Image (cartoon, rainbow, N blue to C red):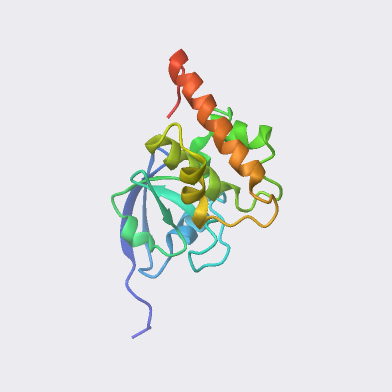
Length: 170
Protein backbone atom coordinates (compact mmCIF):
# COMPACT_ATOMS: atom_id res chain seq x y z
CA UNK A 1 0.00 0.00 0.00
CA UNK A 2 1.37 3.38 -0.99
CA UNK A 3 0.03 5.44 1.93
CA UNK A 4 -1.67 7.85 -0.49
CA UNK A 5 -5.38 8.32 0.05
CA UNK A 6 -7.58 7.62 -2.93
CA UNK A 7 -8.36 10.74 -4.92
CA UNK A 8 -11.91 12.04 -4.73
CA UNK A 9 -13.93 13.78 -7.42
CA UNK A 10 -14.98 17.32 -6.60
CA UNK A 11 -17.53 19.36 -8.51
CA UNK A 12 -18.06 22.99 -7.63
CA UNK A 13 -18.81 26.34 -9.18
CA UNK A 14 -16.27 29.08 -8.64
CA UNK A 15 -17.05 32.63 -9.69
CA UNK A 16 -19.86 31.34 -11.88
CA UNK A 17 -17.74 28.73 -13.69
CA UNK A 18 -18.26 24.99 -13.13
CA UNK A 19 -15.14 23.01 -12.24
CA UNK A 20 -14.51 19.33 -11.71
CA UNK A 21 -11.38 17.58 -10.61
CA UNK A 22 -9.78 14.76 -8.69
CA UNK A 23 -8.21 15.78 -5.40
CA UNK A 24 -6.53 14.12 -2.49
CA UNK A 25 -8.92 14.13 0.47
CA UNK A 26 -6.45 16.19 2.53
CA UNK A 27 -6.02 19.01 -0.04
CA UNK A 28 -7.20 22.31 1.42
CA UNK A 29 -9.67 24.45 -0.43
CA UNK A 30 -7.07 27.25 -0.54
CA UNK A 31 -4.53 24.97 -2.21
CA UNK A 32 -7.18 23.70 -4.65
CA UNK A 33 -8.18 27.25 -5.63
CA UNK A 34 -4.60 28.41 -5.98
CA UNK A 35 -2.91 25.31 -7.39
CA UNK A 36 -5.60 23.56 -9.37
CA UNK A 37 -7.67 26.53 -10.57
CA UNK A 38 -4.93 29.18 -10.68
CA UNK A 39 -6.90 31.64 -8.53
CA UNK A 40 -4.05 33.30 -6.68
CA UNK A 41 -6.22 35.93 -5.01
CA UNK A 42 -6.98 33.50 -2.20
CA UNK A 43 -3.93 34.15 -0.05
CA UNK A 44 -2.51 31.71 2.47
CA UNK A 45 -1.19 33.45 5.55
CA UNK A 46 -1.25 31.81 8.96
CA UNK A 47 -2.79 28.47 7.85
CA UNK A 48 -4.66 28.41 11.18
CA UNK A 49 -7.77 30.41 10.21
CA UNK A 50 -6.72 33.41 12.28
CA UNK A 51 -5.55 36.03 9.76
CA UNK A 52 -8.44 35.92 7.27
CA UNK A 53 -6.26 36.24 4.15
CA UNK A 54 -7.76 33.03 2.72
CA UNK A 55 -11.40 34.09 3.15
CA UNK A 56 -13.77 33.05 0.35
CA UNK A 57 -17.54 32.88 0.08
CA UNK A 58 -19.04 29.39 0.19
CA UNK A 59 -22.72 29.45 -0.71
CA UNK A 60 -22.72 33.15 0.18
CA UNK A 61 -21.03 32.84 3.59
CA UNK A 62 -17.42 33.57 4.45
CA UNK A 63 -15.19 30.61 5.25
CA UNK A 64 -11.48 30.16 5.79
CA UNK A 65 -10.17 28.25 2.77
CA UNK A 66 -7.03 27.21 4.67
CA UNK A 67 -9.13 25.28 7.20
CA UNK A 68 -11.55 23.69 4.77
CA UNK A 69 -10.81 20.70 2.60
CA UNK A 70 -11.58 20.86 -1.10
CA UNK A 71 -13.76 17.74 -0.78
CA UNK A 72 -15.93 19.59 1.75
CA UNK A 73 -16.79 22.14 -0.95
CA UNK A 74 -18.13 19.49 -3.33
CA UNK A 75 -21.36 20.77 -4.88
CA UNK A 76 -20.90 24.29 -3.51
CA UNK A 77 -20.99 27.74 -5.08
CA UNK A 78 -17.78 29.62 -4.30
CA UNK A 79 -16.72 33.18 -4.85
CA UNK A 80 -13.14 34.32 -4.63
CA UNK A 81 -11.85 37.87 -4.88
CA UNK A 82 -11.51 37.33 -8.64
CA UNK A 83 -15.31 36.99 -8.73
CA UNK A 84 -15.76 40.66 -7.78
CA UNK A 85 -14.38 41.76 -11.14
CA UNK A 86 -16.94 42.60 -13.81
CA UNK A 87 -15.24 42.52 -17.23
CA UNK A 88 -12.29 44.49 -15.94
CA UNK A 89 -14.35 46.95 -13.88
CA UNK A 90 -13.76 47.13 -10.18
CA UNK A 91 -16.61 46.27 -7.86
CA UNK A 92 -17.81 49.29 -5.79
CA UNK A 93 -16.21 47.69 -2.72
CA UNK A 94 -12.86 47.53 -4.53
CA UNK A 95 -13.29 51.13 -5.72
CA UNK A 96 -13.96 52.24 -2.15
CA UNK A 97 -10.85 50.46 -0.83
CA UNK A 98 -8.79 52.15 -3.55
CA UNK A 99 -10.28 55.59 -2.96
CA UNK A 100 -9.94 55.46 0.83
CA UNK A 101 -6.50 53.81 0.77
CA UNK A 102 -7.91 50.79 2.61
CA UNK A 103 -4.99 48.67 1.47
CA UNK A 104 -1.25 48.94 1.41
CA UNK A 105 0.65 45.73 0.77
CA UNK A 106 -2.58 44.03 -0.38
CA UNK A 107 -1.97 40.65 1.24
CA UNK A 108 -5.01 40.84 3.52
CA UNK A 109 -7.19 42.72 1.02
CA UNK A 110 -8.96 39.76 -0.66
CA UNK A 111 -10.20 38.55 2.73
CA UNK A 112 -11.37 42.02 3.70
CA UNK A 113 -13.15 42.54 0.38
CA UNK A 114 -15.11 39.30 0.60
CA UNK A 115 -15.93 39.86 4.27
CA UNK A 116 -17.26 43.32 3.41
CA UNK A 117 -19.20 41.86 0.46
CA UNK A 118 -20.96 39.47 2.83
CA UNK A 119 -21.52 42.20 5.44
CA UNK A 120 -23.04 44.69 3.00
CA UNK A 121 -25.22 41.98 1.49
CA UNK A 122 -26.69 41.33 4.93
CA UNK A 123 -26.59 44.87 6.30
CA UNK A 124 -26.51 47.54 3.57
CA UNK A 125 -26.00 50.41 6.04
CA UNK A 126 -23.97 48.94 8.89
CA UNK A 127 -23.04 50.83 12.03
CA UNK A 128 -19.37 51.17 12.96
CA UNK A 129 -19.90 48.49 15.61
CA UNK A 130 -21.32 46.12 12.99
CA UNK A 131 -18.39 46.83 10.68
CA UNK A 132 -15.85 46.26 13.45
CA UNK A 133 -17.60 43.04 14.47
CA UNK A 134 -17.62 41.73 10.89
CA UNK A 135 -13.95 42.64 10.35
CA UNK A 136 -12.86 41.20 13.70
CA UNK A 137 -11.56 38.04 12.06
CA UNK A 138 -9.35 39.87 9.56
CA UNK A 139 -5.81 40.99 10.33
CA UNK A 140 -4.04 43.86 8.57
CA UNK A 141 -0.53 44.79 9.59
CA UNK A 142 -0.22 47.88 7.38
CA UNK A 143 -3.20 50.22 7.41
CA UNK A 144 -4.05 50.83 11.06
CA UNK A 145 -7.66 49.88 10.15
CA UNK A 146 -9.00 53.46 9.93
CA UNK A 147 -8.76 53.58 6.12
CA UNK A 148 -10.46 50.18 5.97
CA UNK A 149 -13.33 51.46 8.11
CA UNK A 150 -13.66 54.50 5.85
CA UNK A 151 -13.60 52.21 2.80
CA UNK A 152 -16.45 50.09 4.17
CA UNK A 153 -18.53 53.20 4.84
CA UNK A 154 -17.84 54.46 1.31
CA UNK A 155 -18.60 51.04 -0.19
CA UNK A 156 -21.96 50.98 1.60
CA UNK A 157 -22.77 54.44 0.21
CA UNK A 158 -21.66 53.46 -3.32
CA UNK A 159 -23.81 50.31 -3.26
CA UNK A 160 -26.81 52.25 -1.94
CA UNK A 161 -26.39 54.84 -4.70
CA UNK A 162 -26.15 52.11 -7.34
CA UNK A 163 -29.24 50.43 -5.91
CA UNK A 164 -31.19 53.70 -6.01
CA UNK A 165 -30.06 54.32 -9.59
CA UNK A 166 -30.92 50.77 -10.63
CA UNK A 167 -27.31 49.98 -11.56
CA UNK A 168 -26.42 47.77 -8.60
CA UNK A 169 -24.13 44.79 -9.19
CA UNK A 170 -24.15 41.64 -7.14
